[in-house]
Length: 574
Image 1 (tube, rainbow, N blue to C red):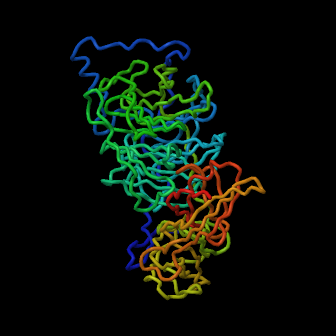
Image 2: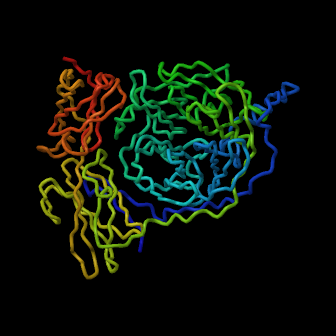
Image 3: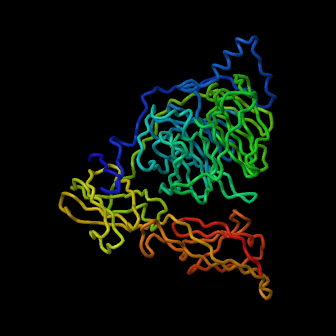
């Protein structure tokens, strides 16, 4: 079968162009084996840093610490993550696999990853499964390193080894039920479900790629937030994670401070803990900046010598990423793992000034996992976004299992007036495409579309039309009234909420594009402002819930079935 796509403009249809060639791109750069350098002793204080003997030596060290046009090193680590036992995973520009280190820095068996593209993002979920991003796809490995699933960036993106600086751009972060991806080869951040369904795509201000991502949970009257570093603009962007959608604007744009009279900052990796502490790596000035996430991201501490990178234990040189152990009260709580790219090593810091180890690492020489697309087999069918009923982004994925003797497909929108597959009311101009090996096609919905219809071209079923419905709802619901009263007889609080969903995209007629706030999939979050301490079911636009915990009665927020979130509204007590 051939790989083909179609135009994306609304005039001719909305099928996003597929990139010629398979999704699996293998790097031509040879990888090397794990090095045998001796690390710093973990149980002893770090040795004192050796200062340069002359101004010329200091200047030469600083120059070597600054990344050139190609970055500080082609061999050093560029991504890092840590699991619940302190085992760290280290990714490289050469891809193929990740190095594993124990909590004390001892080397463990390397894990292969799909393809040979740069490993630009790593994250570990609550089940200690490893998520890997390489600029074109996201892969999930279980605790034993077995491939669970993989899904491509949407729309399909060609991001070869030299397509975007892997030491500067790209990352991956996890949120509740969400995977956030900073695209290495374009200035966007995308949100996916854990199964790979695209939820939103945000174009970053200035259109430059992001360098780091972190999820910051709600606190101190602030919502769950997605933190994004932009190296080329020396900025830290803050988005409301619950309201992340196409065209979303940051809640806050913070300029990363130049500390100690150094160079223009280049923020790369970023992490955030449950206490609201945010740590940003400044790769240009070789320091970690500690920010108060609950106090306007104010800078309260730095670690490192601004502008003076070095190879001594605890010193940095062009660090590209970092990870943080959970603040769980254990001996590892709050520890930081840094991908010290220019020094070709990984360092583990405590939350103060102590360095546990500095371990030299190299890209593993392992055979990459095969990233074969999901088998394109089964009954002839069409499914949009894995069969979901609603979407809050017009960019959707259409999976078409075509007959074996088909020669092509023709796509068209299923308009609001089309009641049967093959209907043409309000449908866009048809677009003919070739068959794809992975059966997945990108499509852009328009206002009023109720789904996608596909005609089979060629073969015994030539001319047969199949369709799948999905609604586009891009607007959030609105809370009209909310109140709470104490029910003395039952000794509990009763919370009542009345909410309505608003009209969908401009040009949508009637109730089209309005997913509604009633039904089994809609929940209401209640608790402190911008928190999510509890949930209530919403029935016919009304929610009635009971609780004995009055902490759930301060603020409420309603979600519609497409996932759009309302503003927070204060509860009135009676």
